[in-house]
Image (cartoon, rainbow, N blue to C red; front, side, top):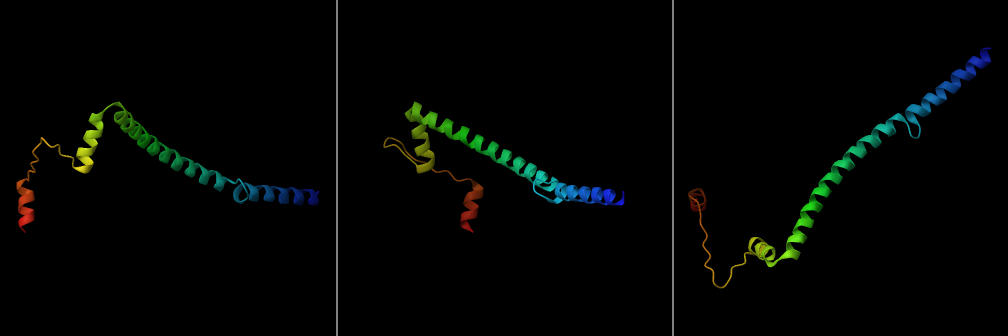
Length: 98
């Protein structure tokens, strides 16, 4: 009877060790849950970025207005028949005189 009790205690201890510290343990489960949450958040950010890029591609495919707007904003495009004016506010002018 004592041998059976001792054997059952050893078996229980081995199973508990595997549950808490072994492969696929409770700690691994919680770590994987955290990694999953992090990956899902990253995926959401990438989906948002992809939607913006897809909208840019669609705009560029549909007409020259989007290309012209992009050239004006990113490259400073000015047409031959246009006059470029740069306006400064009072706070900008005061900061440059210092």
